[in-house]
Image 1: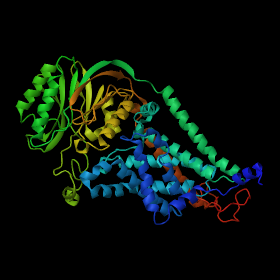
Image 2 (image 1 turned 90 degrees about the vertical axis):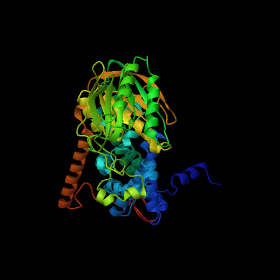
Image 3 (image 1 turned 180 degrees about the vertical axis):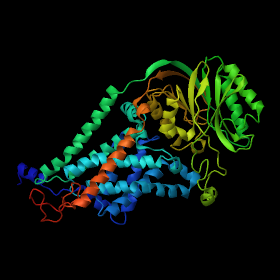
Image 4 (image 1 turned 135 degrees about the vertical axis):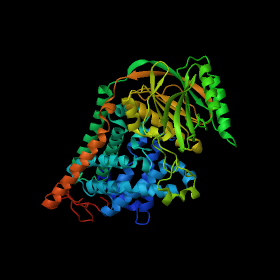
Length: 560
């Protein structure tokens, strides 16, 4: 009978399934592309509505393991592209009913941004990665990911919706990091953790009696990386200045809810009017309506302007409305935040500057105008505003308005804060996507903008989700869901002071550019010196076959 010690020895020396072999079994030539799409889509579960924020720290690991197992750099780039396609479709899947097949086309084009990232994964982690290449991967892969996020953050490519760091909108330590380096710093650290976990998984799967020391050496950079992430997060928590209290204001949000049928603009206005009138006597400083809350140019409809002014008199506060209408001077259709006081419009108006591609204009309409025939793309291009505006409300309160998708852009709220805004406002509408993840995803962005700038932010919508966040990014009061047709009053603490992010800007992105420049220089030197002398050589294949030898001379098992 086999002794207990013999059994333990057999278990210790049993054939082990390496990470690359497992990936190879799962990803045959026929199914590898499909698997890449599915694995790339996994991080979407970390965003609202699922909001599995903790999943973001391991969601990239399967994708990384797949790309590192690619037989060639070209195949790894394809894995990166298809994974990016899967991610973009998953994060923007709620656009499918509006743009149909065009959503897949856009996702396929944007997915190409991840092709270099997939190549980098294999270049640095493929084969038996040395400690040096592993250490480089912990810096280069997050930097490469930031370049992808930076490129797709351009308005013309859809804007910064679904940045990986945005998934941490309800995590206190992450919000503190946002005050130091914006959403970019959070994204970089999330990718770093994923890379560390992937390295540890590979090292664990590669363990054999003869390679334990080698595998342990390769895990040192990964362990050090996890320690570094914990240190950075702890340091930010302790060092980053907390918002300094600067009084309180009382703001009401008016959410009319879904209005269907003909004459919806008139019905919506009547509902907003009735809800606002009920706010009388609450000692308000400001009332905020959602995006497209007024469907008429106030200069052309002075009767509507007078009705809003009467409401301002009744509630004792200015009202910030949003006008979605053709200007009386025939300049075109603008989306404008307009402040109305007891005497009518105050003259403070902000015209939306960054428009939603296909939703509010069609890029290169002469070429892509056919999108209007297969989906709900804009039939007429909206006009752009020229500059951001900080408005004076009541007793010297300065507010910085943004319209809808502009709340996704960190630079816009940062600019308004530098211009003196004490309160950030986003007027939004996601009524076309009521039963999707979009309303909750959109509302969550305000938490990041508040934490980055150290200024509270109000996210007011027509149909939910409306929410308010304090200067530290923490929620103030209860949000208004997509089924609500009501008002809510919020006592919002103001703050003063300047966060490191407002002062220093997008420094994580600049650091990532520097890292990639150093990598390119190192690769250039390597190519000049010859592959045998360079530090970052082509990934060495892992031992294969029953008689292969490891770096320590021990025999490798075919399932190693």
